[in-house]
Length: 289
Image 1 (tube, one colour):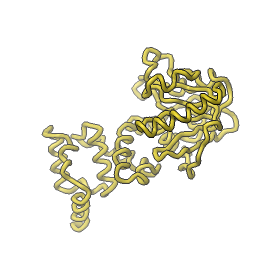
Image 2 (cartoon, rainbow, N blue to C red):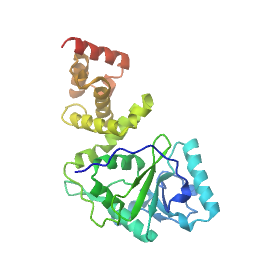
Image 3 (spheres, rainbow, N blue to C red):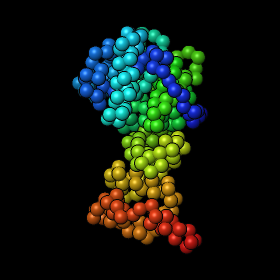
Image 4 (tube, rainbow, N blue to C red):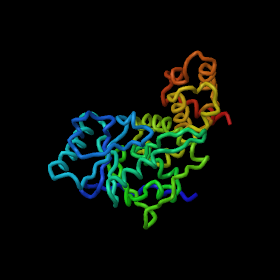
């Protein structure tokens, strides 16, 4: 399949340039959004848990005071709590009802085991990964009537992805068996990226880094003892920073054995290891070959 190319340089995006806004009502108190005309982005099967989903706001329905309030709330949430207010801005034609229907249909996917699940396309940290995981045709199906999807990167800058097709795609979004493992690893991938960002944010937020970590996380699935997300993320990060062979060192083999035997978790067993010691292990392995 043809893959989506990496994003170009970020651009500053003024709010009035978008028709719709997706607001994180699930994580914010109602006073931040309940005065806005909105529609809950929730598939019918999840109506009893509607509070866990974001809202869609048609910005054309807001007056100037409300638009300014949305901008102020977005800035205040980021500054005061670090929470996301605007999850996405969408340039789309059609009625709010038609855009909402399209989005909620695309959110509902069927896993390989036949169970229905939610694809969090509205989450900017998920959407940025879907761009390299899905094909051009799949992304067009995801966008449908949305001409351009805008999302904020973790560094605060806005990025945009425009639909490749001239006309909205009416094809259903069908995920391939090869794509599902990466989707199911998404939570582990996000954990690993957030951890890496504490030490090296520019590296953490590169698309190439996400792709590498996804493959390294795939390796952990066959390793006994890596039972927790934190353990798998740590193992992948060690391999990313110090090479895949780092886990051949006796010190790490011993710690993995402790986790495998149920004595402790892998993360706890590695708590005494810093970057200097791990680099020393990597150097020792290189010298021995």
